[in-house]
Length: 478
Image (cartoon, rainbow, N blue to C red; front, side, top):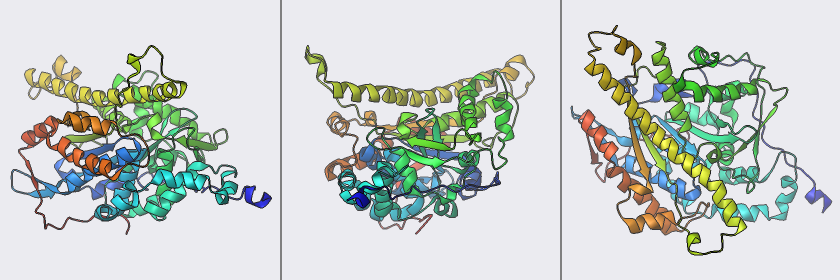
């Protein structure tokens, strides 16, 4: 019995690197060669929110819609909508769909439903936690319930795959995000962040990234990674130091700069040798912070007359796939207030839900502001009078931003909205709920006013693929 209870497991260790490769590893710079529509100046981003199986199924429904439809350009050229996607961000439940698509490509559509969506993942996690055979591991230093979860995710879905498998593939860039519980900052699994840690992301298993992104505080344990910062000669890219070294950085980039300054602490691995990660929803439940930070930097660099990595982009299309559910309560009908547990759950969820709404609206505000400033330049005749005070002061990026909101509010059927809003944030749902979530995603996208505006602006249309059409396959690992 003593042997059974004694700690005997060790957590996986992310390996160090002694010298970074600024243009190497799994990140935006290295993935651009795989982007199929970047030469036309288009950047298409899918942002998958958190929300357990509800989020996983809803985001999967988006992939299914994009897979079965194609875009027809004014010149008659055709491309499957799914093949226009360049970047997918994923948080918590949404990270499973994002990472799995990055790994399997079109093969995902043959396995995801049975391997994950319609499986009682939550029940299997609970069973493993209460299995005496796992108690010894659970008592080991640095090895908690989230490592047990990562093992399960690896067995049923990721099959030992690492970010190296994604790096060797030709699919979109997948960005799974989590939260450093020590400072509340976002940590995204891509090599530019791991360069700060002086660690090799390619050796990290996808299952650990998914476990970290969905590690609900208290319910699950933190996922710990090693930090070797300060040992690999890392320096910030020049386009970032232009603002990070400033005492008063320009407003569009100020929030992003603060996050970079927080990340600078990782360069001191003597005092910060470990990073403890929890659910990405704690810091950004819709996966939009990185997108907004990138746009803020783009705007600030443009104002300063400096080049940016996105100068070649003319259209930025963001599908905000937000599976936030608003389960109604009847608390206002009773003189007695809700119970302690209900209050705690609501108190934890309200800030996250409100921030999610603000993030979506902020993206729309950026789009509207840039469009207004471009209109001001047009009225001021800046194309022929660049030196006028107005033209010098007002210099928005050239990129047009389209924020396509894919959320339950976009469903015209109230009964269906109410049904989806009743689905809890768990890792098990009835098969009917999974199917209705998948179907709802396509319905919402088809009705999107912002998508219709995009199609009108580019003179394109969306048509269904023939039922017998064979989809293109872009798997990263088989």
